[in-house]
Length: 307
Image 1 (cartoon, rainbow, N blue to C red):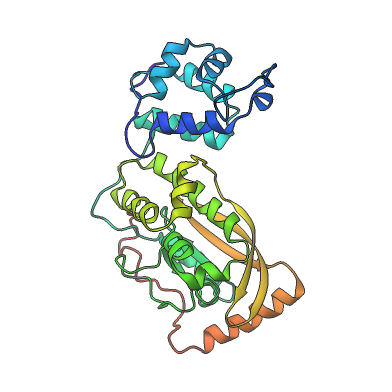
Image 2 (cartoon, one colour):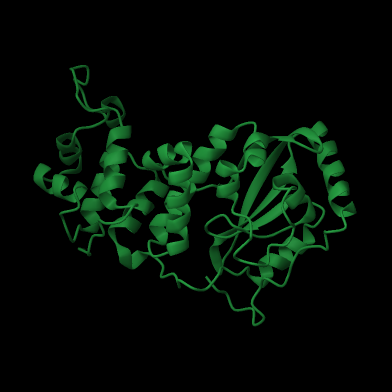
């Protein structure tokens, strides 16, 4: 089935195809005779075309943004040729088929789902944060705030001032310095933002965030240019925390079915010293007079989900 192919914008199909082609070595693609002198870091266009079973001229036009109406069969064949993961394949289809992507109102701020807030309320003694699709903190527990950004106000009710975790990770020296595995964390954040940008190509606030970080931080710009996409559902983080010292936490992500791009991240101690550190951090957080529990006034009064 043929569909209009989207090729423009900072997250264009051609840009993504080129980045994945450059990242794949001939041995990884199963190409023999790769020891010959090569002028490109990854696969040649003609090699991808041959592996995908399309003409070289067509693949060139597709990568250069000159082709239209790429069929599902062709796109999936190219995905196989480039050894794309399931997440990368979904991203490729999002870029190629605008009908798959989600319309984004330009003026409405993101709102937390009441059920997500209720779940967050039950986790008040644990570090947890509810993130919007741009990784803005829509709400967090006192311990979650104390772990991730204790130097910032607790209140997240104003969309204009609520913390952006990507901005903090790249532009806030205190947050950047607290992450002991900053490089790995940065790669994950950028790959997730690029994945979301394919789902919401009309999200002007997301485009502004990416543009700002590309201009202000060379590390972000380089990671964005790499073209990597990745879903994040859990992992481990190491912190050098200003209040409780070094700690290691595992985290798990839960999704609300009605708002699948909102993510509830919950953190658990990875070892006994970290458990002691989190207990102390939770005590300190609740002793701070500015904490009044999880904010509920950021949900729409009707309970209607606003994206």
